[in-house]
Length: 178
Image 1 (cartoon, rainbow, N blue to C red):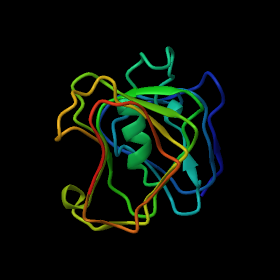
Image 2 (cartoon, one colour; image 1 turned 45 degrees about the horizontal axis):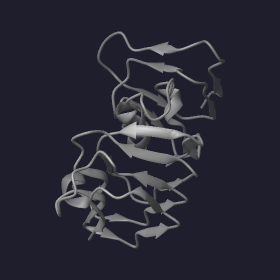
Image 3 (cartoon, rainbow, N blue to C red; image 1 turned 90 degrees about the vertical axis):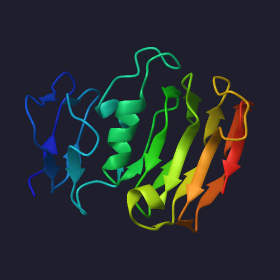
């Protein structure tokens, strides 16, 4: 329940196995989590409302730096994702938590070989996913081969999914597959 502030230039370094949970208020900075994998960092219900992928990795060259792990780590906290106004090069991102919001004017650029960009898949998460919001996003699917199995958003066992003001910058596959 302690208020934790990690100032700029300071990082928590994961040296072995384990997880860290913040129950109280939290203020992070770019690169404040070093060596953590998806699911290693969690936040209590009253700690924060949103997380930033740059807490796990700095997007040094937007659109070129692979941000998949940082984005997945942020998503796996179950908190709302608040990416910066920039371009994120990424592979598949799996949404696993109900009531999650991703709202930002950021661009998500698919890495070469990516077949699904946002995977809202309750079957693989083991739960029904509901009340997911994707809003004010741009997808750049240029690196995806234009075949029917490649999609920007894939939804299975998802209910009350809101997709609003999501744009496809460059056509490369299907935009949404329900």
